[in-house]
Length: 161
Image 1: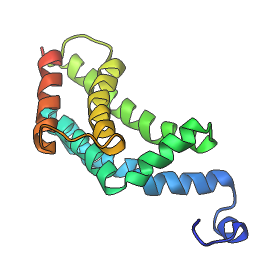
Image 2: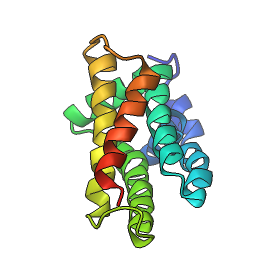
Image 3: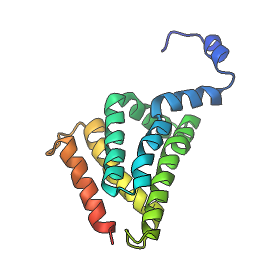
Image 4: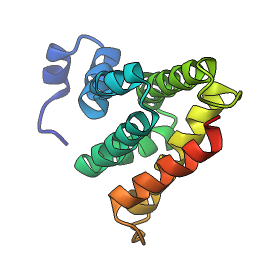
């Protein structure tokens, strides 16, 4: 409970969708991520691009663990907020990373592959790391910086031409 009546909430947000959009923007900050990744993407600095993405994903979750709980709860309950979260945060990040991979393939820097699948593979490594630590509370045998470096190096060793 946030201590506000339904009338007060809808005074500030005309529709449920507007409320959901405000929650998503406050919780995900996807625009900030894409803005932060743009310089490394423009420089075509693969190491920096992927490291920044992984660090942001991990730090964002550690900073606001309620976001993950809200996302999982809304998804398990089949709530409309879940689909909005997915489309707003996940699809835009997936697409941005896939576009980066496609550009690096076109440059001849990466092997030919499906760009979206490659993006999902890297994001999946980071997401699994986050799930182990934040959801299942499993200790890591590596500190976060070393884990990020290992994920980036593993990914790049598989995709670089």
